[in-house]
Length: 342
Image (cartoon, rainbow, N blue to C red):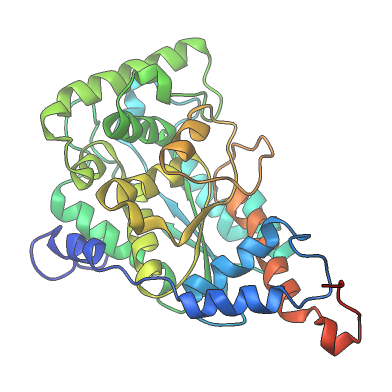
């Protein structure tokens, strides 16, 4: 795993959160100007027009292009699984990673359909994080190092990043992070995940409640929330999202777990995830409430709750279409089509 950034573990992360690149307003204005001349009624492509402008704003270029889309799936294991919060054993995480690598998972088929590159990052699967009901999930050093490792998601270049995860027990972790950030009751933030029964749901809520009570005195800082009740895949996703911002790469967030990672950055600096769109709304009940908290409208709402960046990858098809529509359509002038009368 890559060494943490220079300085104290979280110092450089905090600096990156303070010094955020702004959107390219000129590129956004160029999208609006060209969109007004395309051979269609104004606004007739709905959100696809917004997506084209969002791409230009954060890529910093006009026309926006999708030439190197990357789907990054981060996989981690969690000590809290021993509390009976998951329907599957923790070894399934490694087994699913092998399935990704063999091309047999849902995400492989979606990536192939839309021409997306897939990267899978294994995060010390043989060493689960500490049980958050009894200890901090990660040390500050380990958490910062994992964030730095997540930044490698775009190291080989990307112009669109789809963020997702795999990890048995990680909806419990997402619920704990949200409960720490936003309060309420543990029951407000837990859901069935991969399919726990009613008793399993009670165990999840109990574990989340006990974890927050245990760490309560240390949860004012979002980065402390991440290291104490988060996990390795959440830390890596926050690093990837932050690196994408500093390298002008727009981001599509997958479901509940990925959005919880983004919420850490939003809590530290609400502008930190302006370059992100919510790809879809998961069937995990708390995801909709979380999206409201971070002020994101999902592009898709298909009742999915698979994880592994499946919703983000599906939404990437829409984003690619938006870019092609904007750059490829003729204008009224070039096509010899009469515009509406003034």
